[in-house]
Image (cartoon, rainbow, N blue to C red; front, side, top):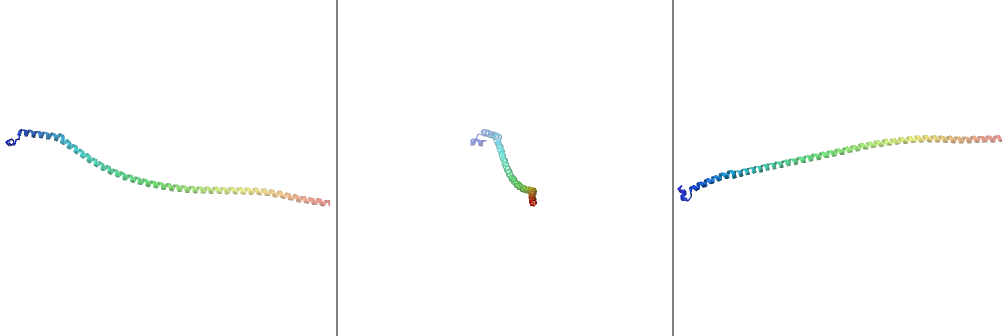
Length: 160
């Protein structure tokens, strides 16, 4: 201890400072340094978790984007298939409608031909009746005239 005295160090004061330093070190370690370390460790964990979450979100986003591409591709293919089917159905309906119209036109044409034949037969029948009546009338006139001529000749002969 005399060594401390020769150096000008008061050992009681040094001991008191050492005790004060130990108390201060203990207090700071317990109430300042350890909470700060805990805070930094917690923050580091949150940052790591945030990075992991961001990576997971990025992977999920990439997965969702890929799935979206697949869904859009499938929807386009389905749309094309539906469009092709609709076009095919429209063509079939158009062909069926055309065949139906041709059949209907054929039946209308056939009905018109039948009506024309009926009208023709009717007109021919009427014409025959009229011709027969005219022939009968003509024959009657001709016969009357010839009968009248014969009478005239007979009358002329009788008078002569």
